[in-house]
Length: 82
Image (cartoon, rainbow, N blue to C red):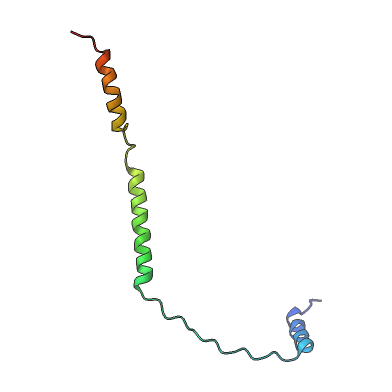
């Protein structure tokens, strides 16, 4: 035989504490969100996503200019003098 938990819970609450106090009315003090706010968030998310994808698609940068300049005198010295 199945036990009726719903009916038992209701009966138990009724016998345990009597009636519950009435809850105060809920007042929604928050104003409606302006439409530009979520749109701005979505636009920023889209721009950030496009930027990350664009950076990932770029080829790897070549050696820094300082390294090329530092190697140049060594190449000149290694060349035979005429």
